Length: 323
Image (cartoon, rainbow, N blue to C red; front, side):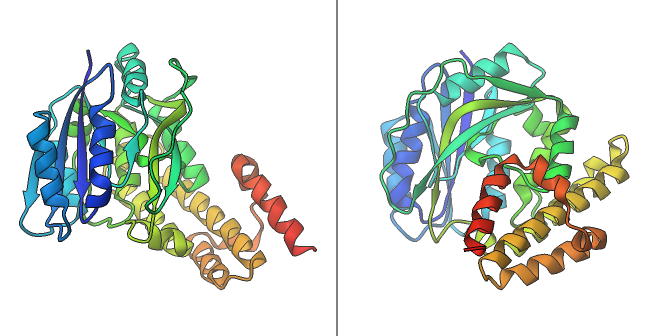
């Protein structure tokens, strides 16, 4: 049986913590350990964490007397892990039943795979965990080289990957190293790019996790202000190609390709905001121009073809604007 270490960073998410931990401990076909890393919460998180650890020896605690920030939690978890696989699960998110069985089956079948990921369902605020439809025992898997994974990011300028669905081979995570504190909001993007340098990546066509959206989310401001998300994405790309990514064949061409892809994403996001009368459009267009002046002047139609998920939204916005 494969073993999985699940690290749950927490800060004032006591109201979600038990459901999150339970979703990990109840996974079948995997030997699971859980580490709750609490960053000096001021709610009832610590009491809940202690109760969960007292009730199940698979739960371990790292209770910090002061808030050291999320990076310290991620990196402590990486150092703690010793199982076959590693998963980072925020306390307000959850795993769906069977997620680890499906993911470890794929990873065990091909020991070269660095990490895998799937889809996620969304939950709003304090809504109860939804009943997720039974997922296929053997989902369709798209296996891509690490190079292809990196190139896709460069072309799209964004990752469409739910973080809590990512299962990483622990040996790969520990060779890849820690999350960089210099990237406060796009550290995950940069780590995924680094992980992909160590082997193929598998995409599972099934729901693996749930992500809760609420005002206290770490990424709420970024999704509210898309120009900030674009800038942080660009910072992740620059960091990657300045460090480990510089050893890739054609690294400089890939770096420029990433800047262009991020600029094209910013351009079409600007168009979307403009059609909705949102002032964020000007900020996005300015970011696009800074990253790639040519992209901002000539509509990058090819980007829409690469982002098939955008076409329905574009058609809907155009229809509303022309009414």
